[in-house]
Image (cartoon, rainbow over the protein chains, first blue to last red):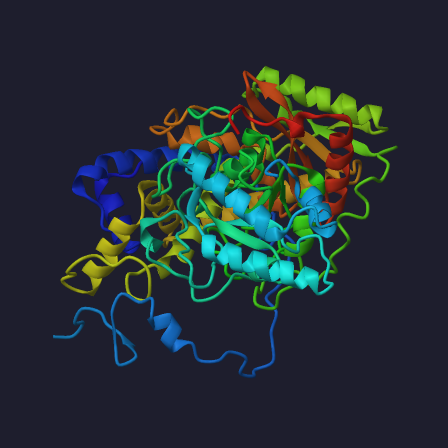
Length: 95
Length: 483
């Protein structure tokens, strides 16, 4: 099933990617060729095969619930595009 | 001095033939003189390097020793370096000075290594040619019209051109081994979880692994020793003792069982590369190895599965680049959605956007089972193939790449053609196995690599085989003209 231009616009919106209208045809073609490659998977019989998430089947470790990190707000906000009073600034969300 | 390997540098520093500061100044001058031809560095950290070199010399004067103390290194520009631009090859992070050091960077600095700079790479490590970098393509020192491979293309080109002896790279689908093969280096992707990923900007978290690029297996052993080890900050790091990677380099290969997967020698492989691989097998047989044909029947499914798993994980990982907390922000956003969309649309290049969209699509409602889950099941089939093969053989050997380095721009209009170049390397990432590429000859003046794969945590075995091979061959000692 090939993607149409409107599908690509929807995916781009889901991924919060602003695409140029001029690039859409080329992007649509590229995504369709990648998905055609990926669709070769559908011919593989995986009945009864468990999915593999971690190559060594390790699970996430738990640690004691104690404070290990100090506050890095100043150094983290020093590299932010816009901050004020220790807060990150974004365009107004609620009118 | 620029011809020295890490092992030779360690001896030179130990017997006081030269100081780390002298060596550092020599290499920095060489980088300034020659790198404009290659574009292998994004940042040269001259001040940091000289201060680290002087500190290393002082430590040595105080009686400290250590193979890496005072030796030079450059880091792929996705390892976070505190206060130094960490761009990931992207406009998105052009202004990003990391607030902390990656574990790998910190460990090598503690060992006394001198950071000469940050190397060029495919944007967010997505590529096999180093052409998708915001900072422009890297040239292959063996032929400046050709790509060096990718995504660790800058790390490879710099070491191949003798700008420095070794560098760090990362390998998600072949990004250490493939550029090593295309530039006549030895490169090692460790077992998944062997080297900490903390502070390594994530592409596909279940596949990414950092490792060394150098000119010899001996040097890779020294560098891996400094990089490997458990790190509580990386939740997928494996708590497994680190062996002495240099101790068994010279172990005999008598009786070593080498498996040649028949699927690696089929259609698509340049026959001249096939001949060189067979020649390397004969050398190893002379050293006592025995060769056996094996089969990895699911290998053909690796690329389709990879191009679901890697983009799916990338679409999740790269959601953090939102124009709010760090990195690129668009001008005059009209609302929050516009801020996200334009910051990401303008900050990411075309290949990164493609992979994010493929991933977002594969993970979206109604498609998850057919794509992501199916890919993870194929991943297990691929792992099972390897487990079965390692019942019969100790290492698996084949070509690292199907073709030598291609011309810059040759595959620009066909992303799929570039994806297929990773056909032999991707399976090790999906299975989490260690893999090494070593120099094995030349085709029309361009280097060819042989890949070795071993069971989990047997990096030492790979280094042993490569080292013994490098004792009886001289491919790895060849330097490109003009460098």
